[in-house]
Length: 313
Image 1 (spheres, rainbow, N blue to C red):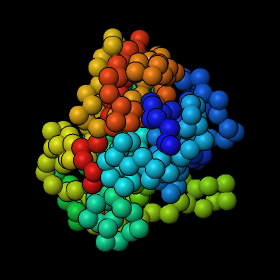
Image 2: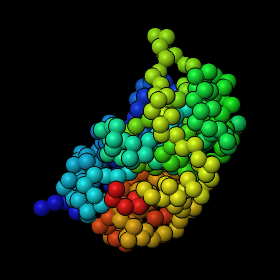
Image 3: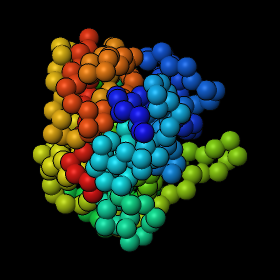
């Protein structure tokens, strides 16, 4: 007999990055492994990282296996469609772009493209992101800039100052980068394909530059006039997922018609009350509320992100 499902929390999957830091420890109180930690995959079922339940009767089970065992009771489809991660940019991330579903199905082993959305958790004074290309930049102009490098590339980029609480939709095809001093919660399609266009001329401790993917990037970048339109970007994200920000919710009832939901407490602690008890979240922690679970209520002293899938892709 299968165990009854309940709100699932997981062990974080930490990813060391040359641009990472220690802010998950500083601002969220996390116990981190050694090194420069750039990402924490908190709800994931991808070959490059699969979440393992950390408490309750299902402790030790991984999310990919749970999808096979519980199917639609957990989430629609035969594979979990989303990935929730935190990103700590101690240095500027590479200027990059992600492909859409059609591209990855033709040219990669991924099942889905990578449309994503950022919620700014923390930003240092003067922090910024790259959000698209400047209006009017054409494919030919950008290709020439990439060939020239440095200042020519920077002149094509749309740099935006950011503050905590802001949301930035980033559909497949939008050039983007996190600047130093920014921590975000990211909801995305369950994919790990990135095409780097420019990496600030950095080299590793062996003097080697990271690989760039210029040809693939130019084939996937959205050069349309509407690429910088926020409504357009949100609409493209909505084809795959949605994010609702619950500000200081008091027994906010989750809608069971939305299917599974990922809750992330981004400021302070939170609790999820359900028929079998209460699940507590610390600041920055996420949980997965299974699709079959009803009568769930969320309360928090700060903000909680509520992410849902648009459909089983």
